[in-house]
Length: 293
Ligand code: FVH
Image 1 (cartoon, protein in one colour):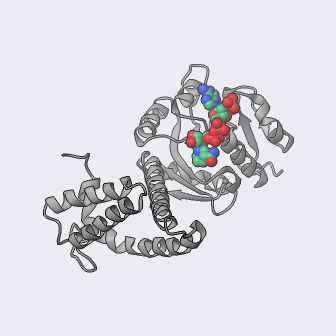
Image 2 (image 1 turned 180 degrees about the vertical axis):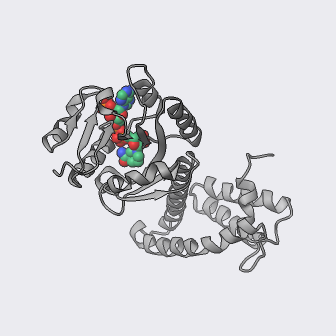
Image 3 (image 1 turned 135 degrees about the vertical axis):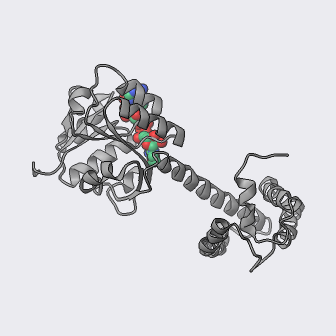
């Protein structure tokens, strides 16, 4: 392994942490690892990683330390102690959490003399090290850029902006998108299965619909950003009539109608607020505040 390669430390060697350290090693970066349960480092040490005898030894000044633990409390349990000197370390937090936890951790790290980047891994461990593995990061770009040559070993590293909370927000927004698409697909599958159509047959149609709706997003986003929702394709009141069909059909064929009713309820609130003649993205108003009625 070339010793002139920039080094990196991985704190937390769970399923994801081990994948991260393995990708750094594979790319030729001198990699230091630390884990509460040291046995999880065995394979990595055999592959050339250095097992730090302590967290202090793992976090020397100037180190880029990727932290991948169960949750934020684990971060503080490990690092918020007088025994650990974080001065001059750059922490890249790859543990899942909320935007509030990320912003709090950034303030905590600054008090401890460390640079802090928050990240969200939009991939599963086996994908790490491939271009398909998207690593979202947020925090000062000046703290990220010096370490990009190392971090590029993980996959596609995207910098979202200076606000440390951005990666966590994109993470949950992406999950909202993923689960909503999957739930809509399951609703449709349940409906057609009442007529003997199997999931595999329906999946092709569902994929076409999902791809078509995905193509609408840029134009709908422009409407939201402009605050103007002219009904160029369909007015919300027209959509609401189709929603009634979805609810009635779901109930008639005996499948669950909770998701259709939620879709309908959100639209009805917008209709009640006088938005019936506008296009679907006007519903952003309903999604942007807690439920009122
Ligand atoms: N695995 C995945 O596909 C997802 C992909 C998206 C991002 N997540 C997030 O990554 C974080 C780690 O997930 P993980 O799957 O690696 O989780 P585990 O395999 O359970 O490993 C947890 C590691 O955290 C260490 N740990 C937990 N609590 C403490 C603590 N109090 N003090 C010190 N270390 C702690 C644990 O150590 P040990 O049990 O091995 O001694 C593991 O190293 C997570 O935020 C996902 O949401 C993964």
